[in-house]
Image 1 (cartoon, rainbow, N blue to C red):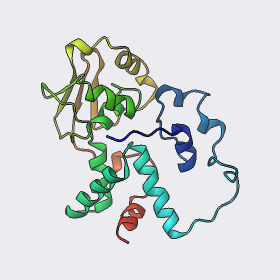
Image 2: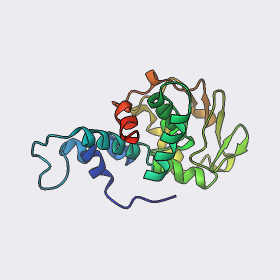
Image 3: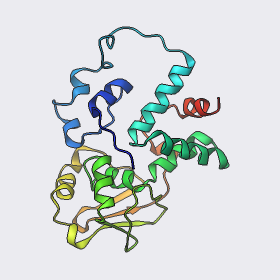
Length: 208
């Protein structure tokens, strides 16, 4: 898996959306997006008129960065969505939502998606009683995530659960914090995704 070495905060400012890439810091006054809610660079505060292509590109970059994916990974999800029946944009987003790392983060077991990926690859979670160490693993309805018995005292997991009150857990997930358990109640629908995303622009970008 590739690693992003740039500034996470600049990504939020570039996409004009708080992407919550730095965990608990994003909920404090130290959040760079709260202090400077304009694109980075010397021309960040200037007015820019975007072309149709630029709007499509920015939307694609926003969603890719939101889920922490590299271009090749993201385009793979788009190609898979194009092959499915139904609305391509919705298929794309619901697949991204079902990623193991995204569910671990959104359920409150990790402070950020990046932290969720690290915890998963180190084998701290079980899915239906079996260890799964692949962040891109797609969860299904009624799947159950458990924190490994030996990992339940890890500081990152305990800190994430302590700060879970700050965020809203999606209704398609059920967290049982005392038991270190998360249940996928049903597969997410488009209406469950509250982040402002224009998925039609992403589909248009890859349909050029």
